[in-house]
Structures are given as structure tokens and as C-alpha cells.
Length: 152
Image 1 (cartoon, rainbow, N blue to C red):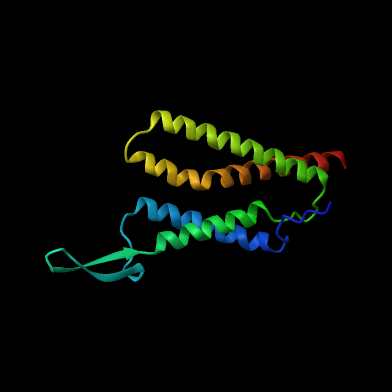
Image 2 (image 1 turned 120 degrees about the vertical axis):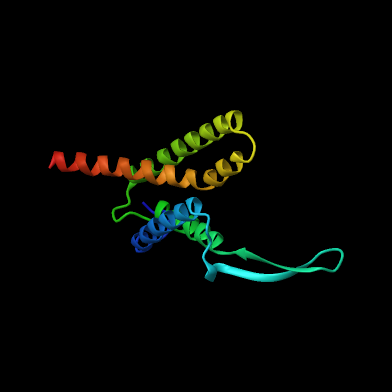
């Protein structure tokens, strides 16, 4: 089956490596609130009264999020070694299921989570749709491979 919207298969293994590293590094940045010195960019700011003070920004979390999104997209939407109609069907069903689950959880979070904690919910929500899709798609692909090995 010709699918023009999928990335080549060769990107998938590299994307898995970057996805794993970005998840590990992203979670460590989330739970360890100490940003490393090399990731700080310092700049001077001026108050209204002319007083100068120095502040900094951290760019590591933005880089990790971009790598996480790009690697997730490559893992999710790269061709399989044997891309056929059944794999396409599993891919579509997994995407629909992940969308339902993701927005169902978002609705629950809207109803039950308030204040500053809701920002964390929205942060995770940026990534959960792709992660739910990747998990379900690979589980069903594994089940298919297992079922085919039993038939042989």
C-alpha cells in the first residue's frame, strides 16, 4: 500500500533512541528543579527607575521538548518494514483511540484540576496523544506478530 504521509522506515530506530533519551532527560528536568549552569543565558534588565539587574533564562527544557515532539512524530509516523493494509488499519484505529483517551483525560482534568497544577496537566497533554498512540500501536503490532508466529 502506498502511503505518502509516512516517513521512511530508516528514521524509526534513531527516533526511538532520541525519544527514550528525551523522555528520561525531560522527566529529570521536571523533578529536579536545578537547571545546569551551561544552559543559562544571562542578560541585563532595567527597572523603571533605571536600576539594572541581571536575570537568566534556561533553554534546555525547550530543546528537550522539541526533540521529544520530533522523535515522537518520527516513531509514530514512520513506515513499518512490512507496511500493509492491516498495519494501516491498526495505525488508524490506534490514532482514533489515542485521541479519544487523550481528550477524555483532558476533560477529566478540566473538571477536577485547578490552579497552577492545571499548567502541568496541559504540559503533559502536549505529549500524551502521541505517546498513547505509540504505546497502543506497538502493543497491537506485537499482538499481530505473536498471532502470526502461532499460525506458522
